[in-house]
Length: 335
Image (cartoon, rainbow, N blue to C red; front, top):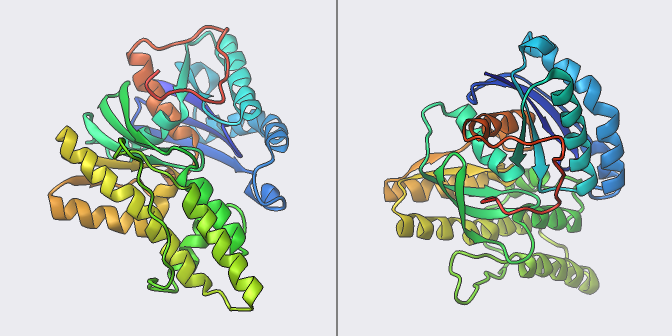
């Protein structure tokens, strides 16, 4: 089954063709990162307009790369939530028109379910049940993946997402947007251990996280150094910041594994590309005898292939939509 998939939840327009939920036939992406870097972050209105400009030509590119014609497409999948509402609407509207024109089923896909499904593309042997750590610019979740379309949130951030904090910290350190990769590169120039950063605890919810205090601490450190004329050790602060984020995530994932009895853990989302977090997950999983799946870097960020992968399993579960499908800025992953 060949699925034409669309992703437009933030600042990447992505169109892919995926076969049977496991094989990438094409994955075309038009990034807006350089444009939004001028403003230090994503400007929603600009993102929406750029999706409109790119999506039709990108669809033709994806079909050509896959060696497919329109007649070869069996279904259309699209991110319908969560994300920047204008951006998501562009993808949903275009996908509905394509599905209607081709006379094929329309499959709505939750963006975070898609991130988790990126692992199915990288690791054909991976099957539920397993535990997923979904960490991106807009979401930070610990998810019990009981089946392909049966997912339950076990823990989440109470405020900022981990990826958002990386972007804000990078901005304070004078690094470009998006901040994840520049922060990771800068952090590799230090062993850290210089700055004491806060670690949050949510009373009564051991698997939940909070990152707002960490973000504020970095801002305050930078401002204090500027006010007293001290030189900020940027590499050390980047390294200590990454470690502080990892210290919020990894122990909670291990606790969730103990509570659920899962022996398999999969990471997902853009922040899963961070080298400190990846190394800590590898070390802890090896120590506890857990199987860890870390998607390749190219499948950590937003892409259309992950939507096509999850779309296949949504289709098998009978989760299709009519032309009344709407876009949503927020939506629970379990819905």
